[in-house]
Length: 218
Image (cartoon, helix red, strand yellow):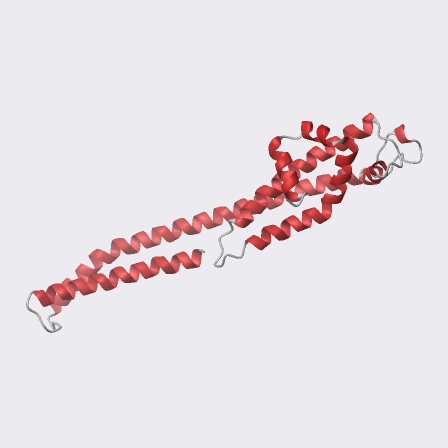
């Protein structure tokens, strides 16, 4: 995109130069000069005329390109910050899923197992849901909804990524596919355990929309 805009701006600059030159020679021709002058004063006047027109145009072009470069760098920085935030949220969520469930409510057999294993057992009706497990899973679901909201923001940034071609949409689709593959199945199990209504009461409307859009594949 930046390269395309630069080409357009440079073409406009060249157009101004050509038009200015044509107008100058047309003025000379209208004044009675049918031939190119060999007088250095005439050419000096021509240089002053062209310089007076092109210098402001060149300054505007340079200022415009500096602005576009700054805007592009700011966009890239925002994208990087969003990516880093997503990575931190992902790491924290993984830690919680793999953390041991140190509650005796399911008996010694399940004590200390990773929370992920407890979630699979609960969703498969191998063990009965308790209030303690529901609170833990609901909190985890809320964190996942926050992650989904961040993912939606990040994929939105990817969709507006400055590019020479309109080829940035596939980046967002690839990103969503990764998160669906990683979290969609276990999130479905967690919602089934705590109930859709409890989840909707816990998360905000925006987070729910993001959860459905990103992890629900909508």
